[in-house]
Length: 441
Ligand code: MG
Image 1 (cartoon, rainbow, N blue to C red):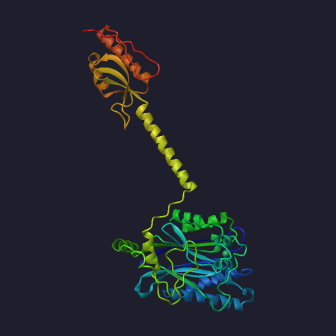
Image 2 (image 1 turned 180 degrees about the horizontal axis):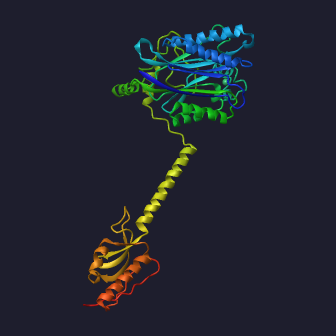
């Protein structure tokens, strides 16, 4: 059983006075409607459309969903025809719904669209627009009179060529997609994608797992980008896919894919308008036509490809810098602890001053700094054991003081000694000499 989890957010934006968008979260159907019309007519049209779809007894097929949108169209159209104040109102309608695939092929996600709201699929870290806008500029893009980039900023980009409520009949575009766990279906009004580009939408979908949080963040970013229109975001996550993804992986492992013999048969099908990124997961299904298993097949092919390299963003750079800073500070602390302390110990049978920790610390071995000329045999028994283990001293001066005390102790016990050996200095720096005398027994 496929399971979905949805979240939504909507806002009037920063320039409009009223929110003429409406949304529907009524598992298994989710929709966005963007109303148009003077006064409050657009708001009424969008509300009628989503309430009609909510009330409609949903037979779980793509055709059934199309029927629901047509029913909503009639509801808006009749209200517009009967109320002079609402004449000419209309609304977009973009919806996704979990439906039963034909021929027992399991759960499918049906996508339907009328107007310029959009449905996207976020899968494997990539955002793909599923629907095709019914706008004047999209028509010009199709005719190669505009590039998609020009269309995105064209002053007439808001002119729609298809909407609910304008006529008693409406043509509905449909797609069917095999949903996999981890898929995120984004349905939104144009107030989102006119203000926030695909990369930034992807970044949010990658970052925020909770659908309500992600929807709210997208609305916030649209307002930050200008908020020139109402903004509505519905996000539908596939949280359980009945092990389809696992089965697809297994099939892939068992059955290496060869090119040439597994291309989907597109004869008799229409595909969505070509888009630069339109490479996978969707194929349009003509109404009532057979179901094309494009989702499953394409997915297997995609899984054999290398993942696209992640784009380096300032956030990831900042993260790397912070991590390097923390590692650097830790390494400095370790170095300080391991190297910048001293101890008094034995070098063979001679008392000596060492730099480092007794026995070493991590990869820092102690190094001999000075010999003292004090023989093990001269050291009082009460101290030999401690010096064997190494007597920690914070600084070189402290270590030398310790040695001086030790000498005094030896002198007081054993009296003056005679050969007057002088210590040597191993390390550089000022040559501190410790005069010692030893006594022959
Ligand atoms: Mg709008």
